[in-house]
Length: 74
Image 1 (tube, helix red, strand yellow):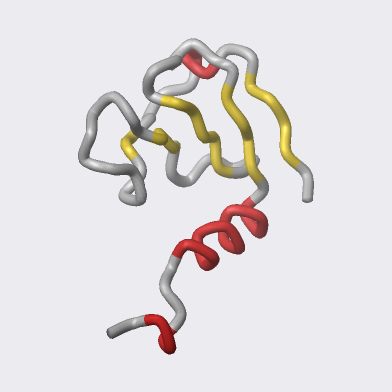
Image 2 (cartoon, rainbow, N blue to C red):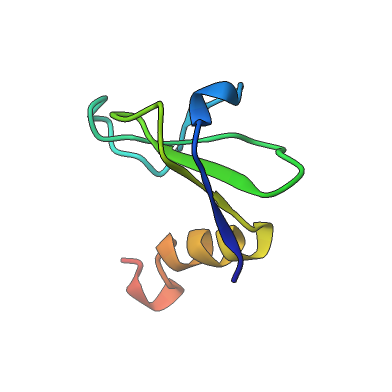
């Protein structure tokens, strides 16, 4: 798993609130879609950094782990 720190995430454009964030505007994860090097991720409370650049495979695995397993659904 290869991740990198982005020291100035405010220099990136296209940040959006992740659909997995809560409805509380003070507690959001922001991401950028379709970035060629991976998925930039930052805390909305600290838009000037630091942020992470997560590889596409690692992000896919992370998102899959957030979804409920079929046996856990009611």
